[in-house]
Amino acid sequence: MEEIEIKFVVKDTKAITEKLRKLGFRISLGRHRERNFLLDDTSATLQTQGKLLRIRKTPSGQTVTYKGPISASSKLKHREEIECRMEDADVLLRILEEVGFKVRTEYSKYRTVFEKDGFSISLDETEAGNYLEVEGPSDEEIIKLAEKLGYSESDFVRRTYAELIGERRHHDE
Image 1 (cartoon, one colour):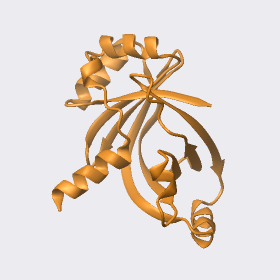
Image 2 (image 1 turned 180 degrees about the horizontal axis):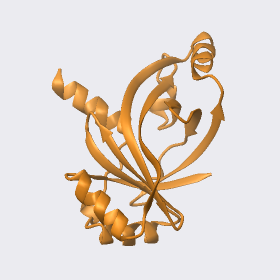
Image 3 (image 1 turned 90 degrees about the horizontal axis):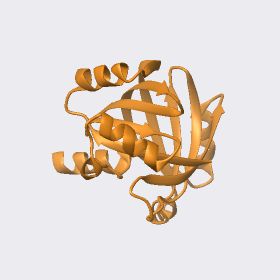
Image 4 (image 1 turned 90 degrees about the vertical axis):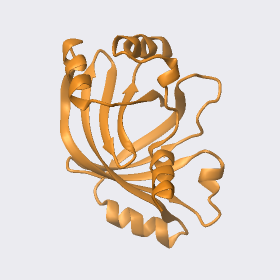
């Protein structure tokens, strides 16, 4: 399945939440903590190829996700995403470590999810700042919604949370 998304920096979480509510978005998943574990081999093969293997733990479940490279031909982030729920993330982490993968990046974030008309919007509170991650049916519809929320193309953030958090951690050292 292809994922189409873009992130925006959020300066005021209350104001953006109010804008979303006025546009008819409803909270589909209340604020919760997500723990993310990004895995790769010792040669960083996945990272080098722009791919990602993630295990995520949330209060409502655990998932394993593969993400393909980000398409360079779009203003938004287009990439293949394959995800499935699992019963025990710790066991899968151990299995993957036994076959040569290691957790290369680990981070947590608090996420609130809003939905409406094929859009899934996550308000994410991370150690690298607060972001609005907008997933939708098409580039055009996402861009139109972004404009309604007060964002323009110059506000697009195409980097991953791992990159943003890695930069922040490196800066803080």
